[in-house]
Image (cartoon, rainbow, N blue to C red; front, side, top):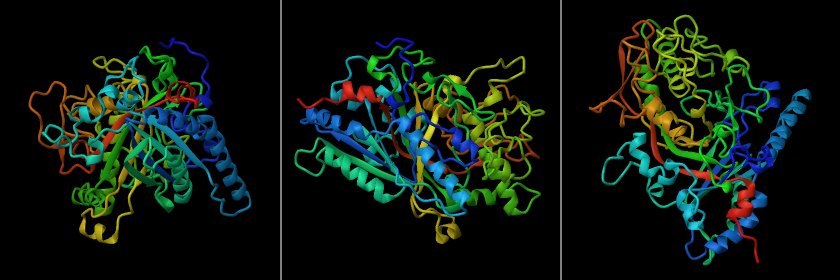
Length: 511
């Protein structure tokens, strides 16, 4: 079993999609990042099973994949190259070149560990061991209580043993890298050691929408900094111990097998977004006293907690401030402690999406005698992922109906799924009474990802989602959230091992 204080963290031992958020060079040049992780414009998730008759073949072939795995050190170098290319191009007043950069990572489910025979020592995470399908009802996923299970696509109701993440600057680069990976495992031949379960691709949105999710809001702003990795955090960016994200490091309170050290759990979600329907809802419920376009824009900002530019409503509640939204030194520097933030919804609704999933001063800086300060460090996650699907068509915009699937390939890293992703979804987003101590106001559901599911302390389940505080002029009035605009269609929990564990425990050298 691992010791509570292993050797000093070596970033060359950590897979590259896990740790890096806002690197210093990005901050210095004021560039708006995406969800970070592996550098990408295109990303692909290749879900697979390991052939039960060729497990040893797979482990031998994995030995040949390991040199292709992108490490955190490599990501740092790749991002520095991207920034330098942009800086050089800006100095010459020319368009920066699109550098050919790719990334590969691999992760395994509990069933994958069992298939490989790496399950003698439990990894110490109940959610991971159960799998997301078994916990779908806890997450509130629609259909979870039916005999057929949640309303997921069939692929995510089957056994999945692992996922290979591939990223790059173009479809060509990603496709070539995937072909190389398939060749290692003899995919397409009668003796293939892995079999495809599902393959999903995503891409960064085009033009001015780069960095924005499909509803149009700038995303990936409030990532935590990791102690010893992010050495120059932005104002307002919380620094968490490495063990919040990496197993076996300081801050991880669970005793882990030695092979789990420097790995991380991935919570993957296949999330569809009903963008035309969301936009129609905003127009139909536009905040009164303003032209419909402005009233719907304000309502959207209050549902999310940020304007589409990324500017937080807590800092600029009445109108958007694009310069603030684009400034990493200001757009995350708030704590819901301005004026009467803790007791009124003048500036930001209690149930706004970014307040639900990162309550900041609602828990950590509270000055009310009935609500002692509570640290949320153990609940922080590092969010990754990429958008998928086309832009909204003119036909969809006119009809207000989704005809083409689009959404988010969501991935989150943490050392404890029960404290991380599952806690955020069940105890915060799905909990209408969170944040606490807001009586007589009941905040309501997270309007973006909140789902009707088991609520702690509630004996009768509600049948519809509501949210208070959407109209600053009538804060006690509940707004009926008439639809679920983010719809989960699958997901799974994975473990992303360290490079040394892939080499010495998961892979097998050819004899």
